[in-house]
Image 1: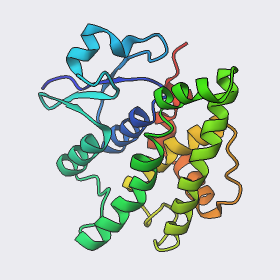
Image 2 (image 1 turned 90 degrees about the vertical axis):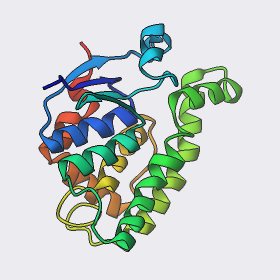
Image 3 (image 1 turned 135 degrees about the horizontal axis):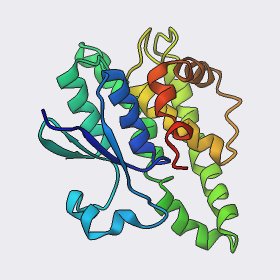
Length: 213
């Protein structure tokens, strides 16, 4: 059997999603850090793995995969994780919930995008980054909070087991807290966060648990 290797960065939201899913699936993997701050993602070795120069990259089942949402779909299909309901209508609604953060908020708040914008907002890059994040994260979470009302939280986003929505939400909440975004007005989200934080698969995937020394 081929070794499963995850090329990731400890603070990458997309990598965080995969760590959660791999833990849920009980898949042993070897993590290979790709330091985005140091520019490891731009090296010829990593670009050969992923022409986009992004993380994560997952080597599994003799294949190499990029794009976290595509990989989550693969893991869900091949490992029967139950990340989406069997009913097509319910599955479409849950995908939409997950994509409010994974597709609409995350790309705008990606460090490369936010970092570039920060240079135009403030001479203080850290202040500029915080300003950008505090502008674009809350509307996405507000929409997520509203959409959550249509799902049966018990205690996760859509029932008594983690779903695609939970996997996409938690990394975004980590970013929100990192940049001092006020999320106190989102009680449904906070309830989901509490449940996910207590789940071993989520806890083990948290950036603080995989942060390099």
